[in-house]
Length: 255
Image (cartoon, rainbow, N blue to C red; front, side, top):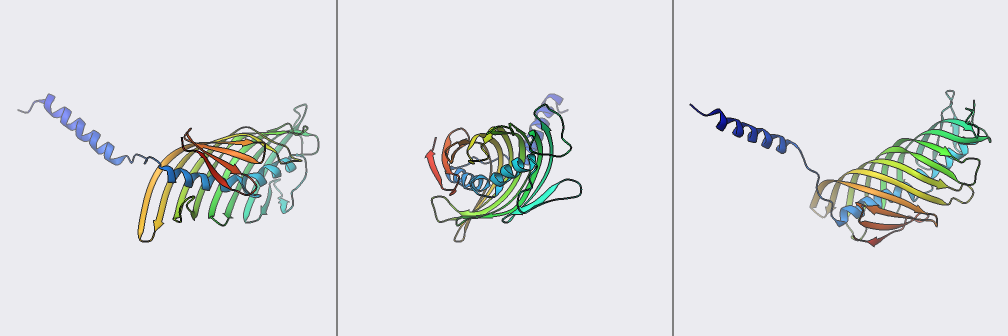
C-alpha cells in the first residue's frame, strides 16, 4: 500500500508546478524599454493637444467659457476636437462658498470634471493612438493658480524610432495615473506638480528580419518644474528631462 504521506507531497508539488506554468511573470525592462516608455509618455504631455489641451479646456469650461472647436450637447456635456484628438467633458461647479452652480460661470471656484479624449498624436519620431478617461477636481479658480487632483486611465499604442538607435519599435501601454497637486497658471501656462503612473507595457522591436517581444511593468513619476520642462523618473532610478514645447527628451541619469 502506498503511504498517503508520500502521495500528498507529490500531488501538491505537481499542482504548484501547473499553477506556476500558467502564470506569466513580467519581464525585467532593459534600458531601451525604459527609453521606449519615456518617448511614448512624452507624447501625452509635450503637445498642444493631449493633457495640456484638456487642462486648459477644463479651466475655461469651469468659468463658463466654451473653448474653440467645442459644442455643448443637450445633456450638458461638451464635445469637440483639437487637432486629431476628440474630447468629451462633463462638469459640475461650485462657488467660493461651496454652493453648487446651476451652470458654470465666472464665480466658479471649484469644479469636478469628467474628461475623455482619444485619437492620434504624431511627431517626426512617433505615431501614437491613445484613449483616456478620468476625473479631475479643480480648486482655486478664483486665484492665479488652478490646482488639479484626480485620476485617469490611458490606453496607448505607439510606433516610433528608438531614442538612441535607428530601430523601429512598437509599444502598447496601459497607464493608471494619479494627479497630485498639479498647478497650472492659466495666463502663463506655467505648470508645477506631479503625476504618478502605474504602467503595464508590451513591446515589439523590429530590425530587418529580427523581431523581439517583451511584457513588463514600470512605475513612473512625472514632475512639472515650472520652467517649461518636466522630469520623468522610471522605477525610481532612470531620469529624463522633457522640454514641454518641443517634446525633446534627454536622459539625465541611468540610475
